[in-house]
Amino acid sequence: MSKKLEGKVALVSGSGRGIGREIALKLAGEGARVVINDLDAEPAKKTVADIVAAGGQAVACAGSVTEAGFAERFVGTALESYGGLDIVVNNAGYTWDNVVQKMTDDQWEAMLAVHLTAPFRILRAASSFIREMAKKEADEGREVFRKVVNISSTSGVYGNAGQANYAAAKAGINGLTKAMAKEWGRYKVNVNSVAFGLIRTRLTEADASAGASIDIEGQKIRVGVNPQILKNAEAMIPLGRGGMPEEAAGAVYLFCIPESNYVSGQVLVCGGGRP
Ligand SMILES: NC(=O)c1ccc[n+]([C@@H]2O[C@H](COP(=O)([O-])OP(=O)(O)OC[C@H]3O[C@@H](n4cnc5c(N)ncnc54)[C@H](O)[C@@H]3O)[C@@H](O)[C@H]2O)c1
Image 1 (cartoon, helix red, strand yellow):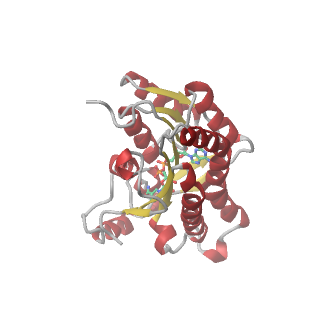
Image 2 (cartoon, rainbow, N blue to C red):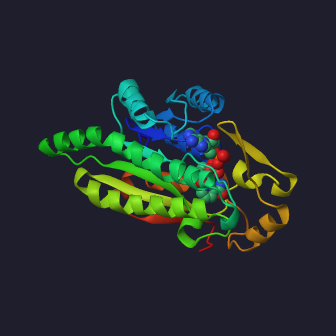
C-alpha cells in the first residue's frame, strides 16, 4: 500500500522532543521527508537518527525559531535538501507562566516571539516558493494542496489563569491561521490550527511544586504542574486522562493528509473531549 505522504516535504519546528518529535516520526512514517528543528541540537539529531533508522528521510536544522534569519534558513534547508515544501508545522514553544501583576515584559515578549512572530516569519519565508509553485501548477491545470498546521492551545481558545502571555500568543496564532487560510486559498494551501488540551510532555509532566524547570537559551524556566492540580485537571477530561504525544501528533496528521484538502481556517481542539 502506498504511503499517504510519499514525496512530500515537511518542516516541523521544535521536533527534538515531545509532541513535535511524534509529529515528525508520524509524517516520516507516512513517507514525508522531514526537516527537523529544535533549539537544542542533540535532541534534533536524535529525531533525525530515529527516522533514518526506521527507513525514512530527515535532516536537522537546529537553532531557535526566534533568531533573526532562522525562517529563511529553515525553508532553505527544505528546498536545498529535498527540492520542495509541502507541509509546515509550527510547533516549537514552551510556557513561561506568571500572574499578570508579576509578569515581566521579557516574559510577555518571549511568548509572542516564539508562538506567534516565529510562525509568521516562517510562513512569510515560504511564501515565494509556495506562490511560484501554485502558479506553475495552475498553469499545468493541476491542483496540488499544501498544508500549514499551527499549534495552539486550549489556553488560547478559552484562556487560562497564569498564562496571559501564552494565551494571548496562542489566540494570536489562531488569528494568523484564519487570515492565512483566506490569503493562501488561491494557492491551494490548507491552513489550520490544532489546540491541545493537557498532553503529557515535559511541560506538564514535571512536578512544579518540586521546582521543575527547563533551559531555554540559558534561562531557567519553571514548568510542570503541581501533582494535585494535574490530578484534578485529569478528572475534568471526559476521556479520563491527559493525552499522549502520539495522540497529539495524530490530530496534526489529520490536517496533513489529502482527506482534509477541503478543510481550511479551522481550529481543532485535541483535548480528550474537554471543551
Ligand atoms: N503539552 C501540552 O499539554 C501542550 C498543550 C497545549 C499546547 N502545547 C504546545 O505544543 C507545542 C509542543 O510542546 P510540548 O508539550 O511537546 O513541549 P516539549 O518541551 O516537550 O517540546 C517542545 C520542543 O520545542 C523546543 N523549543 C522550544 N523553544 C524553541 C525555540 N525557540 N526554537 C526551536 N525549538 C524550540 C524545545 O527545545 C522542545 O524540544 C508547544 O507549542 C506547546 O505550547 C502543549
